[in-house]
Image (cartoon, rainbow, N blue to C red):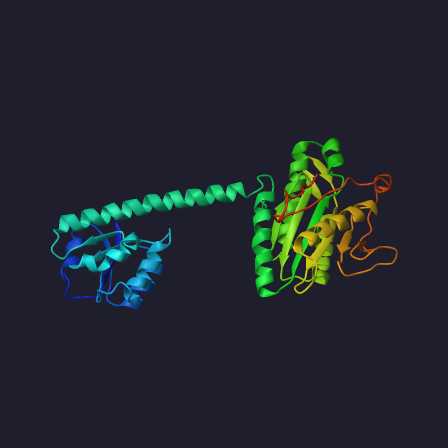
Length: 352
């Protein structure tokens, strides 16, 4: 560790007033504050290893204690040591205070305790960061840097709960990279990985910071669009389709152009259709768009009744034409059951 950095919150100036000068003789980086607001601000801005609080109050419920204890509970926050001659009054908050020192304690003992709690907090912070890193890695697709299907599942649960609570729409897109097998066969897997990463980056660049983009299969992506109605989800899907189609991909002397097919839908508050059905509808819209020729956007409108189809059947946009693979379009696509939320009964279906 570097030199120990202590914030001395000396609110009670009569409680060992010489402490600041004493601590500086031990090579400690010391910042001193004399009131609650200054101490709160310095704790946030200076990020000391520990706060040594000489409180005015002996009431653990006072803002003086509660504010600093809250800041110290943050894994990235400092350790909290309280200078008091009545530690028994704070016993109930002992789990939120790292240590106590007395005005009668020898300076060496005070310094030793400060170093110990700071070192312990440093190790806890390191472990916390490592846990966060591993959690992020567990939820990240290593080829594209997008969320993986595990994290997408979790975010679906979070965003649907938030949408229901706030009564706001929630859009969803399912995206397939067209003819990706052909790209791998004609070039190589290194080029295929480059295509995946560039398409993923293009999708991510076309979204808002709080949207969720995930790779959920070999050439399959999914996007959650909080607060987005179907008409806007459809526009976003079309914008992404055009952006991918404009890519001029080059890697290792090889070049290619690719396209995507998108299925779009949106959950609306107050409707009779749950989000699980919206996910399945968006997936069916994607399949129908692929059957119609790929490089286009399919839309699932649960309340619509298109001509020649039943209620809730998917439609596809007509302006998103591309070079259709008509032989493939005439084949029946395999069933793809989608459930990104747990069902009340039975196991959820999976994407084939």
